[in-house]
Structure formats: structure tokens, C-alpha cells
Length: 171
Image 1 (cartoon, helix red, strand yellow):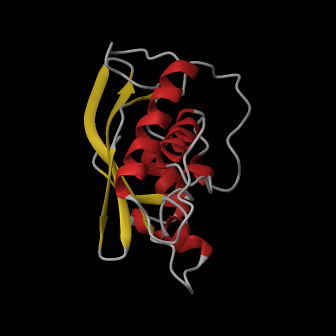
Image 2 (cartoon, rainbow, N blue to C red; image 1 turned 60 degrees about the horizontal axis):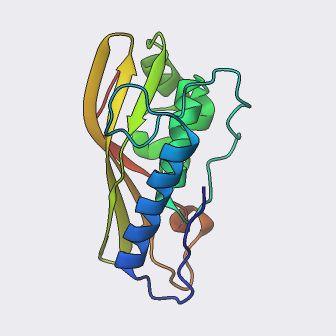
Image 3 (tube, rainbow, N blue to C red; image 1 turned 45 degrees about the vertical axis):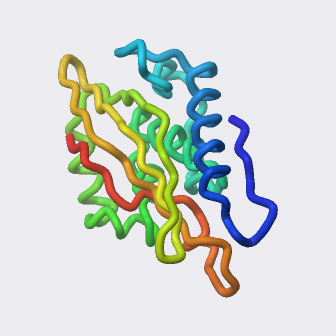
């Protein structure tokens, strides 16, 4: 997936939104959608795909990060998926063990991903995208919100990476 990275310290939210839309389009081309003709990605069609990385994506493209998280979830790599949340997983409100127990109840999780929108506010960027959790015949619609701080001096790598801020779907 190709992403567009801002060249200056000031982030252009239109460029970021365009980048997210391009990422969603690339995801759609790379991974077939399963449940809806409007779906932009379903990163779960191939259960034999290589495992998700141990560390979350550091991509500057939020759409790429959402696809990587969904892949980890689909492969039931709970420890890897947990790390996509802010503060090394703590933003999920759960410990890694609790996270695995909560999501481990799913029989065959898959995700239908849709393009999102990027907005700026109070020194941070937010990316919000519709998402559908599919587990067998059960379809749960919601949204995923990613956040990162703008490029400011003194920001840590953890603050600068896109990470999950909130998720409205539950197992």
C-alpha cells in the first residue's frame, strides 16, 4: 500500500485525507472484499498469509495501519493486535491477557474496512473509518479511530505513530 507523507512539519489534513483514501483504494485492489460491494478491504481472505509483525505498523498512512491491525486480529494474533492501541496497548483499557481473552471468543473474525476521514485538532490528527466485524453470520458495524500527534519537536515515536484511540465494535 502506498501512502503519502507530508514533507513539511505542518500537516495538510486534505493531503492526509487523500492519502487515507488512496490507501483504502489500494487495499481494495489488493484484498478482495467479502461481504459488501461497498467494502474497501477485507484483509482476511488468506489464513495462510505470513503472520503480522510483532510490533505495530509505523506507517504514516492510517489506512495501512488499520489493514495491518485487522490482519493481526483475523489471524488471532492478539498480542500483536493489542500493540496497535496507544500507549503500547493500554489505551484499550485492558491488559494484554484481558484483551486476548475478550477477543479470543471470536470463532472466525474478519473485517470489512471502508475509507475514512482525517481531521486535525489540538495538535493531533484523527482518522475515523467505518468498520464491520464479521464472525460467522454475525455482522457488527462500528468505527475505528486512529490518532497521532502532529510533527512537533520532542514528540516520542509512540506519539507520532498512528495508533488506535477507540473502537466501537466488540466481540
